[in-house]
Image (spheres, rainbow, N blue to C red):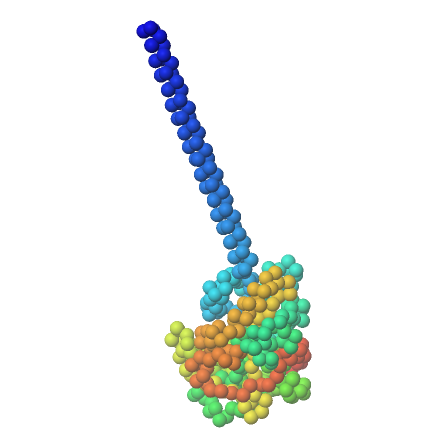
Length: 380
């Protein structure tokens, strides 16, 4: 009987141990299952986050993207405006700088493979060359049509003016009384022999001013002007507009034909010597009683094979708005093309003036003949 009780007790203990073991195994299995479920959920969550991040990046790139710029302008203010555009739109501006002719040749060589979307350069003549070489395309933009007057943009909407400058007579305050000055044509008179400073005929600014005279005065008068200026030069043409202004101050000549913003840059220079130069010359706007003072622009065009067309248009629109125009005007002393923008104090001090009333497209049309005339009259 005693043995029987012991046997019964042993069986009971074994059963209890078996039940307990099964319970622990079930609990561990459940915990493993729970852990596996949580791990799977974490993995799923990570995958979703990665997918979301990837989608967000793709969306951001698609919405913002980039715009690739070829430009012959080399001003700090331009870089500031590009950064501002990126800040406001999220569109990155990739800039390639160089000389206008070299960039134009590069664009031509690259053809459809080019990465360029926008081309910015000085002078309507250069912009017309881009169009003639079929390197640009027409764009439609109510913003640009509203911000930029008709005469400061291409008649077929291939290029648009961004800044404006006047080509004026810069004279020595010591040796010239402004009452002696009147027109561009008057500088061809005998009293100005050996006193006129101006750049080479290879310079697009001079080609464009002669192209404007072809339009306003006819070929005979334009040729007479070119021949008269060549005869009255104080020296063979050399250097840029700043060099002509400095030569006036140095006494090499008494008057120079130059763009206004070069004088403005000297006046606002951090170099005291530049300021000293600018303070010794005056600005005279010629032809106020006749056809008006010659004006020109720097401007932008959308490249024919632009890969980021929408961004290219947005970029040029941004540069034409009032805020950007006033930055151009203040920092580089250029006149805004947007008539609602204010000018800088420097150029405001020079006063208002009458402009030539021609469509700047004609500067490109007349450019080949202008070059021929310079060669015919011996303007170096």
